[in-house]
Image 1: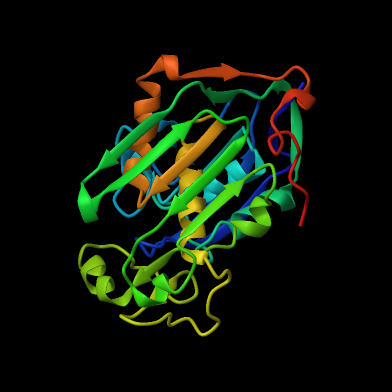
Image 2 (image 1 turned 135 degrees about the vertical axis):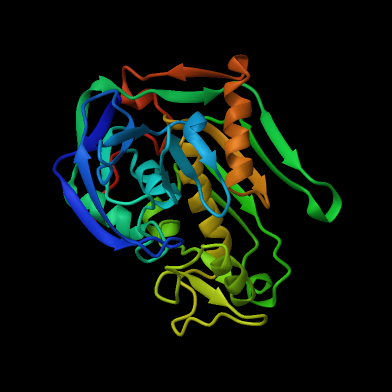
Length: 307
């Protein structure tokens, strides 16, 4: 049986929110089979659980936000991406503020935390959402066009193309394809950092955003170049971060996908719109399990190696 996975032990992290600038503590705890991934706002007078799902997403401006009633947690995508990359099914995330800490701006710190706690198999079958036919969404036209699709594929593959019209971005790789069967999430994707432009910072901060951002947790560019002294981690780090984000956004479905994701200039809003479109078409997908893990597509059965 290809089994569900949770943590072996509890692990903690402390950081600041990228947009709020607030100090926040995370406690990641094991959870029983079929729990899913649940954020718990432990700072509220009565703790509130917010279970990850596509319909729990209530805001996609600059980040993915999930809510239950008045309680919300935003900027969940990097932590969710790490969970997707490691194949983690069940997890409680106690959080002491409304934003997940940005840490170094990538998913690698979350991967390290999760792997340090250890991953264990559970006595329940892992459930996948398998694509049966293509589902697509798009917005705009001409130079403003952006789109995202999910298609049948025996595995999990993501391809993304960016178009920023900025010299520092244009000099790097514009398109990446990542396949869980042949690539390594930890090596190839997890270290890609979020990025932003100095021209946008003043406007964002006036709107209460990017209050915790800086050169230690993001790639920052002026009108011409990257300002970080250590440069880029990958020669295509910008588009790889878009793959990282997409993996986190898609994992908000609540179950891993068997299929291919392809996108051009997509973001958090379009990714969630794609998931909702998928759920609205029940003939486009089915839930599957594997009695024999050797029957599962390559790249989806193995526990990710420790660091």
